[in-house]
Image (cartoon, rainbow over all chains, first blue to last red; front, side):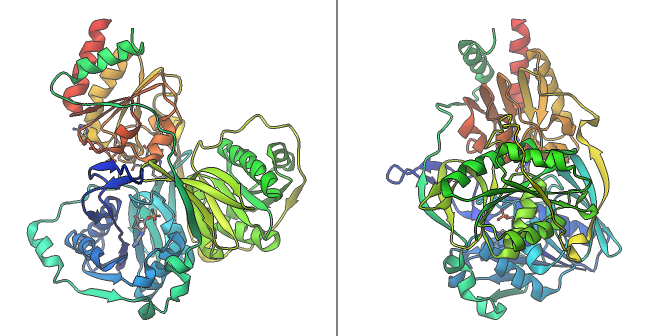
Length: 261
Length: 325
Ligand SMILES: Cc1cc2nc3c(=O)[nH]c(=O)nc-3n(C[C@H](O)[C@H](O)[C@H](O)COP(=O)(O)OP(=O)(O)OC[C@H]3O[C@@H](n4cnc5c(N)ncnc54)[C@H](O)[C@@H]3O)c2cc1C
Ligand SMILES: Nc1ncnc2c1ncn2[C@@H]1O[C@H](COP(=O)(O)O)[C@@H](O)[C@H]1O
């Protein structure tokens, strides 16, 4: 079967953070990285290939600047066979709608049986791309999968909802986003990391996909940001490094705050 | 385009509390913008009187799609219903409170309408005759003032952002409509359901919650957490990651799809502090976080943070609390 995995490059969520005194905005040092949630989607595909469907071909699909190729390679190292990277200056500034339009155009071309996404992007902290892409492709959609079972022309997915766990069955082709608890993504061994660059990479422009540049990027964004402000914080935080006495210091704090007697 | 449509969700035969809060906020926004507010309800076997009661929360009209295809809470048929409502209603804005179903449905609707979408909005303002949301970003360190450039704007608000009142007791006229469903929207079928409350503890009443996340390593990692909770006379809570992984029962889950808790003391152990977890516990009296990653977002909203290993810190804490009797 043909599986596509949508991956996004994001600022490293575990990198050092500081507030820029000039702009009052949070600055993250460090490099961009493959969205950690997407590693679970790749792992899910690799497990399908290693298990029930050995003839699976895994394509990594991303929308992002050329520099995002590092994250594409990282995804390929984890088990992708090839990549499709839509890099176009006119795509810069795309919001969720624009990104969904570009992704859908790229995915339509591939004729995939299963399209996998992460539960959310660590930078945008939204969780709507699966639903948007599925709608544009007119395909069934299941989000936040805690497990995926492959059947004949269908997938069965267990997923959490507000009242418990639903088990749902969707016919393929379909779009599925996976929860971060679906598996433990493996770390690729060095040869796989070295080999990723040599796998087939396709870099496409919007024109290659027939996407109207006016419908995406900053020009086609459906949302616009008119200002920024600072939310009310919780107040002072005491953070200590454990030197062996952290539990004592915590208890002293709780006593001082009269949380424990 | 005129008017505000609010997707009101039915959970367990009743309108979800979260939806009522969003409806009331929409009514305030509608008054400021001069736009009428209509409630859209999708389900099966819905009662007119119960739906009309949404008038007491600010709806000037309640539009009900009642169809077997809408019985299971699967999102795509709801997209079809909302799109049908949009055809006749020509709404300027669509609002929904965060839930798995509502977020998926609003995602699909925005894509179908070519509408801009804002997720996780925490405030709704009328500015210059239009809706401008406040959407928090970068781990809640900044609020983006986010409006729309498309004729229709779609908003999913953050869980618990808008608390509902008791309502006025008023009612609104109910109008039923029949959506047309797409074939692909009906290609997902509900084949089973496990209820959340079938097993496990009730964490809502505990004054102290010791919560565990994936940083505990495995299901056995909850042993020391249970001992610590017992020492405090409290209960154990969990993140979705560990509940999905089967380490702890769902009834203990805190967050967007779990419970909202407000204990006097919340101790987060091996929890990164994702927004969807935060919305369920940020109202706690005192928040303590123990995490070995000093950049973990949980430290941004803790009162006392320990950069350290749960396997060493938690047992020590348990001993100290036990010793105090
Ligand atoms: C629509 C939606 C709804 C959701 N609803 C919820 C919800 O209701 N509740 C919820 O919790 N989540 C929810 N989530 C998931 C949420 O986004 C996160 O994925 C989840 O909360 C992460 O759980 P975690 O903190 O246990 O795991 P992780 O994010 O993996 O964090 C583990 C942490 O443990 C630390 N750690 C590791 N080892 C140690 C050690 N030995 N000592 C100390 N620290 C250690 C790590 O540094 C890390 O910070 C939802 C997501 C979506 C998209
Ligand atoms: N630019 C992008 N390129 C490829 N996939 C993306 C992109 N943005 C989001 N995704 C996918 O959509 C998922 C959810 O993203 P979001 O809804 O934006 O938080 C991510 O985990 C990715 O799988």
